[in-house]
Amino acid sequence: MEPSFLAKEEFRQYHEKLQKKLDHKRYEHTLGVAYTAACMAMAHGESVEKAYLAGLLHDNAKCLSEEKKKVLCKKYELIPSAAEAANHDLLHAKLGAYQARDKYGVQDAEIISAIMWHTTGRPDMTTLEKIIYIADFIEPGRKKYYRMDEVRRHAFTDLDMAMYLILENTIMYLEQKGAVIDEITKETFAFYKSCIKDTF
Image (tube, rainbow, N blue to C red; front, side):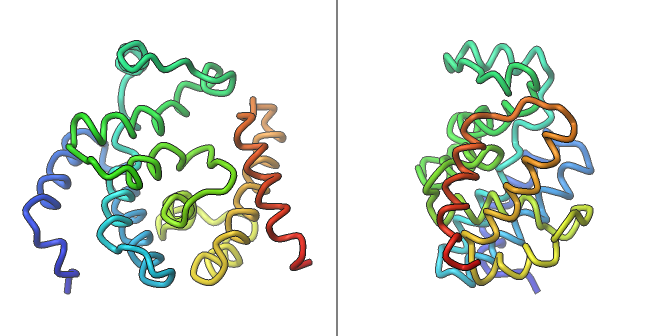
C-alpha cells in the first residue's frame, strides 16, 4: 500500500510531468531514489515528503539535450566548472535545481539545495542533502559497486560514513578513467574523511 502522501494531487502531477521529460530507465531510477530517500528520512528523523519530492525531482534535467543545457546555462548565468565543462552531463544537478523552482514550482530551499548538490556533494551538507546524495547511489536499481552493501547499511545509521565511502569510490573511479574531478567533490571527500577519522 502506498504512503498516504502519494495520493495528493501535486505528487501525481510531478509524476506525470517527469514521465514526459525522462526516458524510461531514468524514470525508474528516479522512483528508486525517491522511495529510498523517503525510507532514509524515516530513519533519520527528516521530512518524508521533502525527501520523497527531492528524490523525485533530483534528475529532472538529466535528459535535456546539450543545446537546451547551453540555453539554460545562459538563462541562469551559470558558469560551468572545469569538470562540468569537460562533462556537460554534470550540469544536470544545478540546472535541475533551477528547473525544480521554475518548472515544477518548488519553493522549499532545502529541497532545491538537495537537488543542487546531489552530484558533486559539498562540505558540511545538511541531512536532507546527504540523504539525496546517498539515495542516488544506493537505490535498488543501481548496479552494485565496491562496498555497496556496506554503504547501504551505513545509509540508515551513519550518513557521514556513507558519504565518505561513496566519495572514496567515486574519486577512485574517476581517477582510473582519467576524468576531470570537480574541485568541490575533492573538498567534500576531504571533509567527510575528517568527519569519520576517529572511527578507524
